[in-house]
Amino acid sequence: MQIKADQQLDCKGLACPMPIVKTKKAMNEVEDGQILEVQATDKGSIADLKAWSESVGHQYLGTIQEDGVLLHYIRKSSHDTGEEKTFEKTITNDEVIDRVSKGGIILDVREEAEYAFGHIEGSKSIPMGELENRLDELNKDQEIYVICRTGTRSDLAARKLSDKGFTKVYNVLPGMASWQGKISRING
Amino acid sequence: MSNKVAIIASNGGLFDAYKVFNIATAAAATEKEVAIFFTFEGLNLIHKQAMQQLPMPEGREHFAEGFKKANVPSIPELVEMAQELGVKFIGCQMTMDVMGLTKEDFIDGIEVGGAVTFLEFAKDASPSLTF
Image 1 (tube, rainbow over the protein chains, first blue to last red):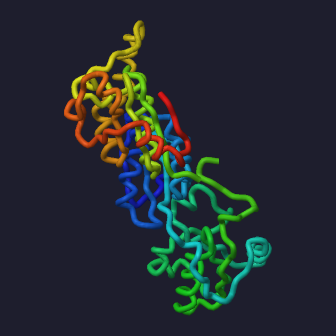
Image 2: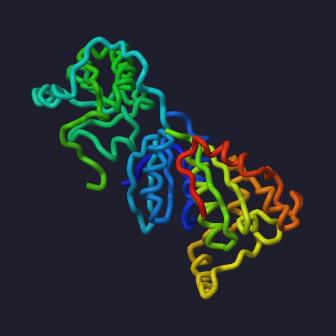
């Protein structure tokens, strides 16, 4: 499966510390919240890029291997945790599975790459940036439980859906960052 | 958590140079403030001519092939990268005097200072490393 990234960086054939140095430079060109794909063959880059992301404050999503090349996915830190959430109808992480078993869907509005490396089984992926153009994929008669990483993007998405005439919309809090239940992911 | 990494480079071989500059560039790329104090043989690592052909440890010359195969950047390349990332180079004045060297014998952009210059930087650095 191809994972969507906003930018790609070729570090194939480069040894430590080059993948880190090049990733740092490339990240300057990436916008907050966007995804960088780093292509590398240095096996140490798996541990290094993960540690680097944590140290610098970006979100390391995961790594897949394709034809001997490691593809690392990193989401540039965005300051989306502190903002106020204003959409009124919310439910908690703990409630959502039970609610959705009675009907409705979970809508995951994180980026595709974030979804690929860990999502709730059966949830539907429409990244926040694509929501406006993909409204026809959603059913107004159905309950829609919107989730993201920390509740900020899903708050925005819930408000947008509500503006577009969806009435059975709920924001799921606190979101995937503290999800305790089962997750499905691309590489097992 | 400290945001500074302080490194003392006191040996002048090729292996020493890689240890120093790999750690320094990796730290700088991780948004640390990095300073390297070059003293005694460590000065070779930033000496205009010497840095071009730093010696392998005796009996380890066969590693040259491995360096090539792993596509490891050359020392001058790493030095340039480190400077671009803002790593501060401090040459040891006392050693330079002993060896009869001046600032002009070294690459551009270095500072020259004594032990206290380095200590001042390193007082709140973590980690401090010696190679």
